[in-house]
Length: 88
Image (cartoon, rainbow, N blue to C red; front, side, top):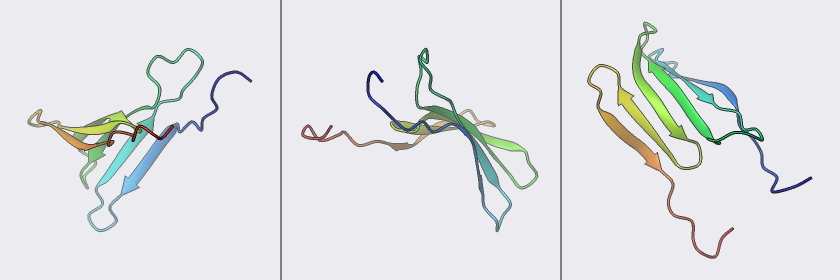
């Protein structure tokens, strides 16, 4: 075994608001030997009638952004804080 070992998150995650029936589907991209963009994710937020409202993009270890599909407005939902210099 060469290099660092890691746990790879990939596949589709569905998050449902059971009160409003709105939901989001996030697609975690798989990582491989030749992957140029590891830890990437994308997805869509839907209203209760299954109409897409927001596109999600980012990296599960760096940031997540949302784009309103009607207005095009881009909002950063979260960003990872800088890692302390003494951590690995």
